[in-house]
Image (tube, rainbow, N blue to C red):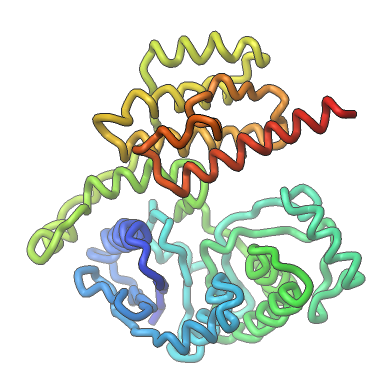
Length: 367
């Protein structure tokens, strides 16, 4: 027996969209080749999914609270829920995030799991090369390079925790990860504490491999566009409609959002004032596309607006000098209140980003 394990809690419907697509992407392979794999769902109150090919495992509010360190750290569920699953099933467990898509049979992940062999999603790089390096450096200095007896150095490797695969004989490595995670949380509020902890503990105690060739984890990049497409596929199905969805071929998700030629040309001209960076071209194209679609398709407009912001924040990073807020004038703090179609949370993100750009500019001019 092998356990492919999802977990879901809270009330955000978008997580159920992602869960639906991910489960069905795995189930399509298991239909003809089950390979003794059971798909299970740790479901918080009200989140059971009898419409999906999963075994629902109800989780009480009390258990969720324990798994989330008394409500102080939601992501702790990845380590604490994994430990409970290993205790319960006494079988190899792959705990997987819902924002995933299987492109190959799940058995290829389980093939990489065994006594002394664990799996995470992908190698992200060394701590010194990560965007949180300043915090990791502070932790290394404060702990003298040891967390719960496990070494942490600038060259320690961070792996993505969207997939955590462990054999029950290695539950001790999970215990070590929990201890490391708690040590990190004692001195830091960094949200990737569990990811660091599992990376360090699994690498120190086992032969750790990755599975990004089997499963896609879209926690960044095209997530907003993927959610939009899923909403078109699964919006409102009930009963027999859901049954037909499970039997039907799962439509692939497109990764490409392509703006109108006129928007791309305008964006290219605007980018020349900022060095012609193609990432900036796409950010402006996305901004113009959002304004173009806000009346006839507000959901897609929000996808475009999210895409523009993601590129500016993550594509350009701290290189805000080339950003001209005039190129995004409808999304600046002075005018974003007029965008009634935009999701409130996205409005706030745009407002925060624009103020960050302005503050950076003022700081440099004062030097």
